[in-house]
Amino acid sequence: MEKDAIAEALNAYRGEAKRLAQERNMQFGSWASELAKVKKQIENIVLA
Image 1 (spheres, helix red, strand yellow):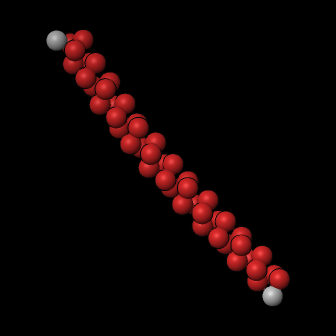
Image 2 (spheres, one colour; image 1 turned 180 degrees about the vertical axis):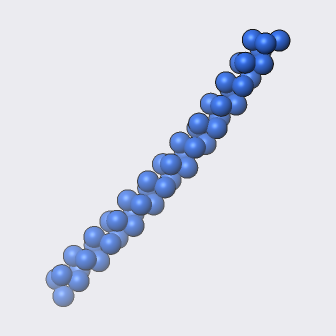
Image 3 (tube, rainbow, N blue to C red; image 1 turned 120 degrees about the vertical axis):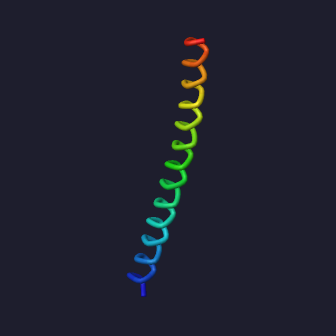
């Protein structure tokens, strides 16, 4: 029974760690996309 509880806790921890990593990656992707837009706007201003 004790091993089952430990295994269940570890699985919950892994699941939460995976979810947080995916959330962080999505946020970084959004940030990188916004940065690319700003870079393009600056390039357009410089070339104008």
